[in-house]
Image (cartoon, rainbow, N blue to C red; front, top):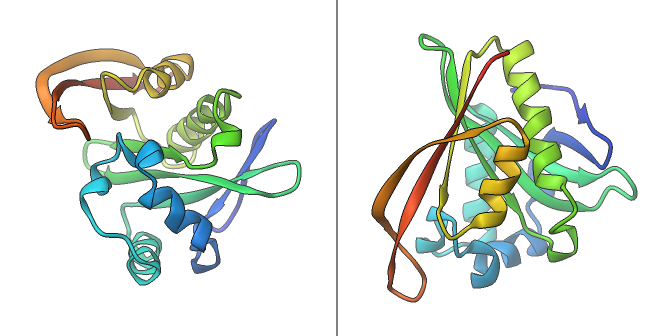
Amino acid sequence: MIGHELVGVQTVLVPMRQEHVTEQYLAWMRNPAISQYLESRFQEHTIDGLVAFVESAAESANSYMFAILLRDGGEHVGNVKLGDVDTHHLRGMIGIIIGEPSAWGRGIATEVVEMLSRWAFEELGLRRLAAGAYAVNVGSIRAFEKAGFIVEGTLRSNVVLADGSRADSVLLGRSAP
């Protein structure tokens, strides 16, 4: 795992640690309005389970998980993960959650994805990054596109929404400069 911070205009990414697993983080994962587009919404979340998840990511040789903190005040507003890094094909996948509604619509997700992408390309030597989103999650797709990702494909009727209806999912990708 990395031992340093990534600093942006609005945010600082720090390696995710047990201290970031709070009741606030648990509330994000249990809030349907926040977790509705996460695959983890199908699990029952507990503090112990989140601690185990964070510890597993920290110990992984191919996964990097960061807490997203506001530069002004240090509030923990979300998490971002670069996971399943494949050192043979030099690729990885980004997943992000902005859990604090007060942080929505401020360009934070775009900044975080840009910072993490730059780090992945420059420091890890990756050549390709990917992400996925439910097609109805327009904000997430827009954030990735603003960070240089392009929509590479659509999987029709690929996911089940919270109301039981089916929706498409979108695959996004970005290659190293």
